[in-house]
Image (cartoon, rainbow, N blue to C red; front, side, top):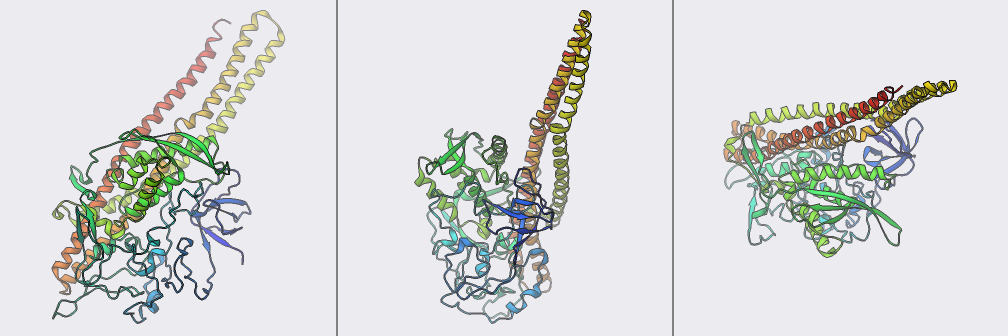
Length: 628
């Protein structure tokens, strides 16, 4: 059977060898093997070429797994899962989730202890066995979904010799994320750490059970069971994957260093992130083509110079890609700016390198101006560790970041917020709904403006230039005709008309060059913000999920099925998520006003300069007629 894929988003080809896609279009794949994040196939119009692998979903026919296989949902990076593996639940897209689909699994008897050969990871933010191993779409730059590529546009090589990740390290899975049910934990806090836990006396059932638990049972001594807040059976919900559910239900437990607290404060407009006391900027310059393995491997290296160290470091795109993946995993309620898109062809062309560098500058500007991201250990490691001269220190920092325990549910333990009395849940819900409507409208407007600007730039580069040059050629033709009379007194007129033709040629060139001065920067900014806007549905979903749990707990209290103390604990933890979400929304609006003010000023200034150049050309042509 031929391999097929369905397009998840529209894609417009911009380079030779690429083909365009329409959303929901079914394509035939030439191979399932991606080429540095790109696939080759044939679209419904019969065009054959490359397109981004992250823009399509491969359509697979269900096939029975052979005996001893680790399961159909296990990606290649988890090839070290031992035989006998786990049996993941069927991947149900969040939008089409139906609880009935899980009834056969829920009717299975609970296991009190897992079989010896069963591999059951307990990753932070993934409370059900192997849920962490299920691939799920994430937001992409410019709308869509980010997926950590297995092959970036710079191949992985021996520089990344530490192939293990958190999931590969024995004894690391779930370390500090989920304590034993008796309240103990295998982790030992170092000096200067505080053991924080949101864990209540709610029984989770057997840790070894592969089926999700419907309800958490309260079992105080001598008391009968009471109703508790139910779990979300959709393991692929953002609320579950981010660890928001585990945190709100009181299951998170970990150790937080003194300096790792992320503070939300009350500003004049509501909750906001505490400012970075040591602000800095970082330049990205000197993109240079480098080679290794005696010229067999080529890549582009960028020089980064942070203002707070003034020590240059060199990074490749794959380093940026790795950093983005770490940050997106660590901060579920922070919008990590998306990187410029990859490209399968023309990676070493000057225009592409220049465009990528500009995109990375925007990315770096947003990273350095975020109060939380700018101070993050992994980001500081990225900016300050000279990997080319101290490879050991670079790899140690890389391993530390990949083994970070403060992710998923544990991330929320690091948040320090104002008193909960400062929040009104109805007001919070109203603000979140308002921001949700705002992001939808802004996304639609950004798409429209991007399309309009792109079309206008295309007309300037091709149509306007061609039309002005036609006018210039016609004026020169008239001048050549006048020269045939060979009258001395007409020579000045002939020269003036020829000069006018040259002036229109020059104006045509000005039109062709202008988009890179004004329209291209606007489209670069829109692309970056489309990436931010693609992040916020997931961020809002985490906060909405927390509010739902609060409402459910209140209902149980009114019905006399839950203790007020437990409901208050759920509300307090929901407030923590709400504070962080509102702080991130405030930061987004701050940088939006800053960026669009600056960019619109630049755009209009460049427009004025452009029309002044056009006027100057026309005035020069006019003065040629003064001496005729």
